[in-house]
Every structure is written in structure tokens, then in C-alpha cells.
Image (cartoon, rainbow, N blue to C red; front, top):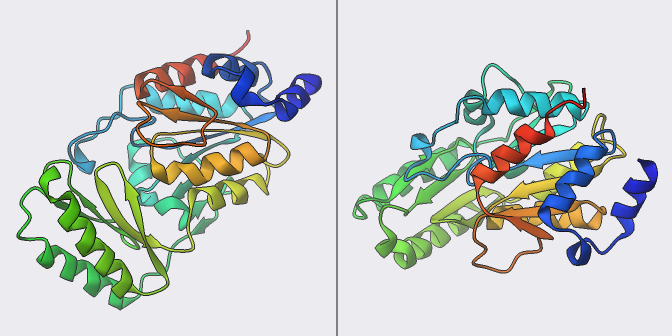
Length: 268
């Protein structure tokens, strides 16, 4: 298996690996790989609003089995706040990076939370008031981040983008505007999913393993770049409508869930 891992690490994966082949490789060597999973649009099907997503029965248990097979080297990397993401997968508790890495819980249970000054609380309130004339636009308070969803009101995409850009500038250099699928988000500027993966890979049980990452959005591209640079494999979920540095694709969250269930099976 060590020879297999070296082959995977040195090969031009975008030329020789399909998604299925990559998953077969890591399934054959669970001691050599770490797995990083986005939530919305990757593990879970997208929904009209953040609160209307559905966690399929058995998914949390499947992720737990996958984690055990890979020696605990499975982490969730999401734009959701850590506390909210945790609630989706009760009673299981996984290593997790929330708010694109601004919040983290390591394998040992230690937590890092993002600072949120009073000025940012006022900015969020001002944003709610400022978008009141945009019916269908949903403002999601994430604590140390705020998102404006326009999935239900696509006609406001351009106008909302301009307003969110102005609010991001008003928030100051500690904050950045993040684009996503039908959403604009103001998040801590020091955070990225790529940085979160780097931090995980510096400590056991992730240390010394090749990384595999799955995600569906622009916010996952920094994670893909880190994984690729480390000789791992990156998989973009869903229809790819923009350029991506992912090395392969998988059609839907349904197929991701099926792959997780399959990878988590023991060899007994």
C-alpha cells in the first residue's frame, strides 16, 4: 500500500484518475489518506433556504463509519457556523472547520472561535434593514459572518452584489466578500477552507496522510488547491459552470453519499 500511495502522490492525477478510480485508491489504503468534506451541495442537497436542507437518514452514521475506517482522519469543512453544522450530524461529533475555517474543532476536541466585535453586530443589523426592499433575499446571521442569499430572488443578483461589496468595505480589512452559489457572504478575511485543511494536516490523525477533498462551490477552490499541491485528489460535486482546479468531478450529492457509505464498509 505504501507503493500505491507513492504512485498516487507523484502521478498527474488529472490525466489518469477518474473519480471512481480515485475513490478506489483511497478505499484500498485508509491508513494513508485523510478525507475533507464540504456540507451544503456536497453531503447535502441544496435547498431554497439554509434552514430547509434535509439530512438523509443514516448519513451521519455513514460518516462515522468512514471516520473509524480512516482512523479518525475525516473532517467537515463548511461555510456554516460550527455550532449549526454540529447540529446536523448529532449525536456524532467530527473534526470540523466552520465559517470557511474561521472556527475550528480539532480531533482532540479543542475549539477556536472567531472574534466578533460589536461593530460587526451593528453592520449585520444595518444589512437586514438595507435589504428590506428586496423581497426574497434572505440574510443569514452566522455569528462572525453574514450571508445574503438570493436563490429565491435572482432578479436582485447585481444590485445585491453592489450592496454587499459596500458593506464588506465598511466592515474593514478584517472582513472579505465571498461569492458562492446564489449567495454573497461577508466573512473573516483571514479564513479560507484551504488554510483550514492545512491546519488539519499538521496534526494527528491527519498528519502524514494524502488528502482527498470534495466540495461544490467557489469557496472550495482554495481547499482543492491545497489538496492538489500536497499530491492528493480533489473532486468537484455537481455541474461545473465555472473554472475549477478540481482534478475530477462527481455528478451529485446523492453519489457522494453513496460513495461515503461504500468507503465506510469494512473489509471483513
